[in-house]
Length: 123
Image (cartoon, rainbow, N blue to C red):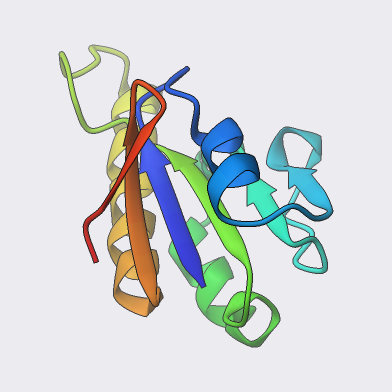
């Protein structure tokens, strides 16, 4: 699995399309991850849904590990930079997103950070 992360609007999906894989894409804004897709983007939307439901996103990925561990590309927005939100829900999201990123980075064969459309392999 390849994990691609970076800030919002930094060109993560375009980077994946141009440099890593072209295949069926799934945007988690449409619901839970569809692990049959080649590229799963917007994972942070799923994390926010988990915050709202009171479930742990990393646990979901652990339970479904066999479905995404192969030749998939997972794309997440890094929410760990900047000012810590005042609203509890957004702080909870930021923490849960970080826990999921740590887990996925540990499982990934390759980790790429995208900034200004430029990818830098960090693992």
